[in-house]
Image 1: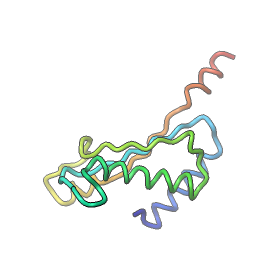
Image 2: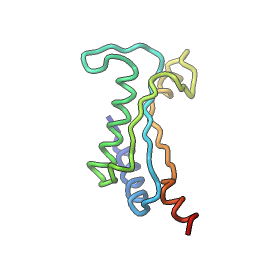
Image 3: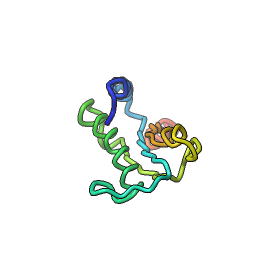
Image 4: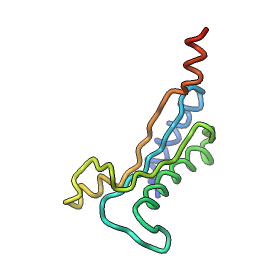
Length: 113
């Protein structure tokens, strides 16, 4: 679930990215290291991927971002940015990241002109 401020930030991001065609986007979902197994998520891989795809849906379905230029990726608990020894640290590891990368095909076209 993305809060209203997060939705506004994603809307702004989509507006900016929709004005350029030479940037691709990877959305990475992350979790803490507490094992999860529910009827909805088999494990932390599932949960992290679900986090990423929820952001992808907001950018594409709700805000018109090009589906050919975006990828969802689940990293599970394997790239923590904080300690998993505290509640605050675990909360910080439950996140999504937006990674922008140039479309190399467009860059090669420019370089070869």
